[in-house]
Length: 209
Image 1 (tube, rainbow, N blue to C red):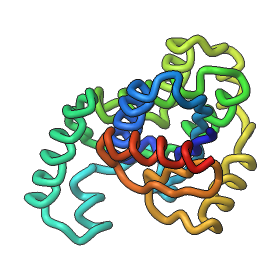
Image 2 (cartoon, one colour):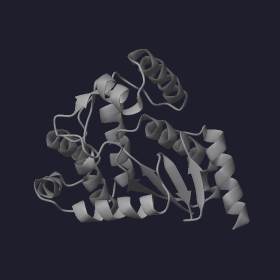
Image 3 (tube, helix red, strand yellow):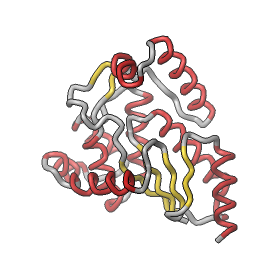
């Protein structure tokens, strides 16, 4: 079974959804042989390198008040805790394009799954900039990737075209919100669903062949 997890590092519901999916896959165990691939999607593609204050950005983008943002964040913290993910303050929103380039490389170099988790934790748990090269290099090394190879990638434009091509592919396929989980290129599961929803859907898809 091939699972394409379309998401952005900056998306809190993607952190919830991925951890819920991981809990579901633990329950499934060896019943289903799963290949998990991470596909790029940028929620904030035009952000400058210095990023922007989270509350100001969300208030302007979605037309909601700081009070509504606080309530939404509290709900997300609770959902994260339920699947073993800790949300911290997340004071700024950052550009994630270089993180996607590194994830694209990590798919062929190995450790893409570990890097994805590390990136989500760096931003959502520890309030670190997932677009900063020093942060990216540290995370790459922490999951067993070649730091010097990562440094060369970040210093140039390697994998930039591939990331943009993948983004276009999924957008043209109708993906406009994340997380979007595509199973065997045919079945779509959207949003940060609870683990039992993922488990039930994956078992049903496997049974249908």
